[in-house]
Image 1 (cartoon, rainbow, N blue to C red):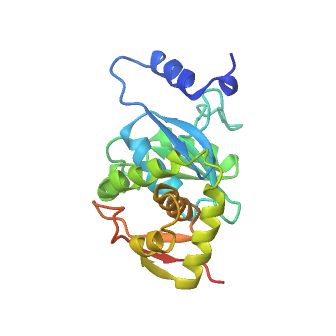
Image 2 (cartoon, helix red, strand yellow):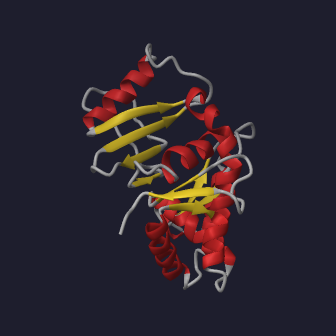
Length: 228
């Protein structure tokens, strides 16, 4: 069975069986931004995905390279598999390298310099994300996972797209408010779908949502980045 033909569950089992016994956690997640199931191989990759990919309005699209997606340059450098390949709104490409601990980005190791060189040869900007980038966002992780759970719950609900469009129209008209305002305006709809729509709009960059340790709550604030 090819990787593309495997179900998310089978891919997760295959990934788990191929790992060392002392390896870190595996996370299986749904990305609405690229409408795909992901397997992330550490807490660091989970944080990076939430903060710098899924909920980052400066990321148009991305993918997690498969095990056989290897890059190299003509200088004989080591083969490279980025942790993520990103396309920004201008169509520019970035390679993201997620590292455990802290990297001295002003004095890169020869291996990381080679990775940067390969990225440049492939037309991409090489970016390293380490604990100094990830830890300041730790308080956002549980709230963003809660939003992701609403988005996932409504992934295959037919009316989700129409509800999202209606919520966006409302948001463009009001420009800012709280979750309770949206829920009251659409009180005739399933509230789970309404919250899912707010999450989807946040992922696509149409809304900004206030993220604190309790979010999302009825008093969570939002503001719209689009106008009528």
